[in-house]
Length: 155
Image (cartoon, rainbow, N blue to C red; front, side, top):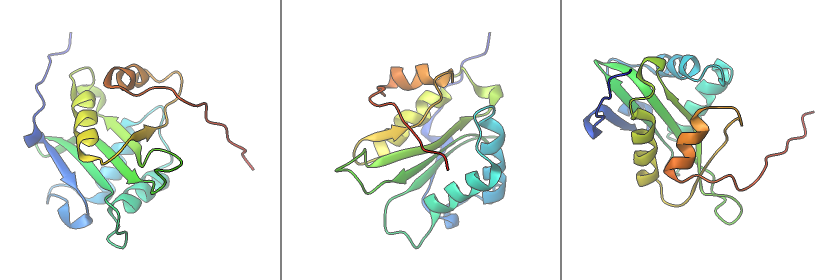
């Protein structure tokens, strides 16, 4: 049985630009962490890095952000949040990526990060999740509902 850790705000670092990165972590290292920790539901590494760029670009006037959970100066969790600017059509916040290190899963970190990003967001939050992803149960417990089926035309 995994030992339950009490995750605190001291272990959660909010990044709103690349200037906010701690000295022990680079954007490329965070992208690599996300790519690894998202398996088997990961996007290609360049797409993960693009998501970080979109969230932390100083040229955007909107309040995107990244939340990093750290333990011993190592990332053990991360969330990438983007503003959609479409609150009239879809929720105004998109949870682009959420990942927890496999060694830290089942200890409440994913829930703590979700609660924190929901507090930080102004408005509703949406995310995409594969039907067979075990994290889907966590999202439902936190309050996410399955409102629509997503359909795509892949060309």
